[in-house]
Image (cartoon, rainbow, N blue to C red; front, side):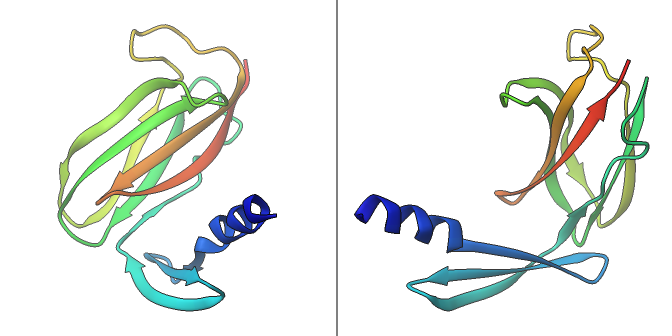
Length: 131
């Protein structure tokens, strides 16, 4: 029973809700009470087109100058490509993903996840490669 309650508490720990185009409001729920609220100063857009072949465009926005990491993973969360690992100024950006892994080999058809990590917070979206 304690494992179930712990799991449910874990699921309720972070509630992320979209707010405006450029921010996400984050509430932390602990013991059934909202204990903290903050603003995540970045956004990650859905890739377009999706599904894609051979390439797709991913948009993201930053509210301040910061270091960021953008990765692509398989459905099993194996890293296949690191798209960005650098510091960027505040603003809106687009990056092209060509369906190749870090070794330049074409990825097979399937679902992939792409993540944007900023200040220890990670946003994730799913994309589909069709050949």
